[in-house]
Image (tube, rainbow, N blue to C red):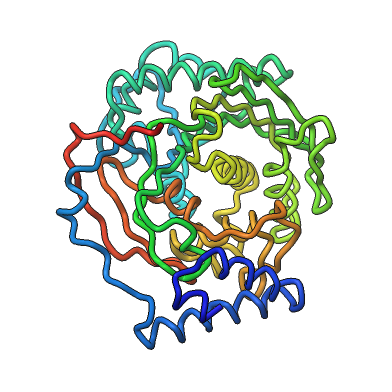
Length: 370
């Protein structure tokens, strides 16, 4: 691993790690890789400073972090202040006083159709045009839940979970390197409703292909994606891990509308992990769980844990690993999706996840994904 890292051969590094991981327990091999990387970095063999912000001034983006939509009474006026139309989903989880109160599917549909939700999304940093499109996506997701049997009065939560753009630093997260990241205007408008039983129903709509699909999964540490719904591999991984680590008991109905282009490399799979986690965490009051409060104390900790849901690795004491999705990766995607801010790029280092810097860019510039 050290030789591969010194030679900047990340394919070799990945193969070396995979070989090591098959011979050792997950925690030992993961920590061993981190130690090997730390040793190489301490010798100054691989680590370089990130380019100055000016080098990125010609690049562009507009992005949104994952947002938990905070429903407001219809007679209120949306406010741009903290706690107004939208709040960061991750901050809602880590700061319980900001958790949005439960509202109904009926309330969400009213706000989406009346323009309240659109204005809230604008206040969060989206353009007016994007806010209109996203409000329609939320309304469509709510309609999907109603079509699946959810009640208009069902307690509901809504999340905007974006795709991410990897500006620099591909395959560096699981090797302890750095990445320059932002989130995208396109992503998932997810709406969830709490169920009375221990089951999860997921309905998906993908705009780029016109595909509409559904899957039923038990809220169990042995949940598996149905044979006729291979796309549910990532929801099943999230359900298994949360059932195993936190013994959650409240199921959810989830519906999402996705406007990410197919196979665009913008991490739709990790976004699904994030939206399933957010929906189940909201339904089961995970913000108050003693293990979460003790072990996941920062945004970066939570993003690292989301990466561990996907790759199946341990997250230290109290949050043992479980079957992931079958591939090994880090937490770069989850970090960009959950933590990046509007009109800014962020640089993170990984193993462990740490924010290094943040760069503001002109809002007139855009990334073009081809």
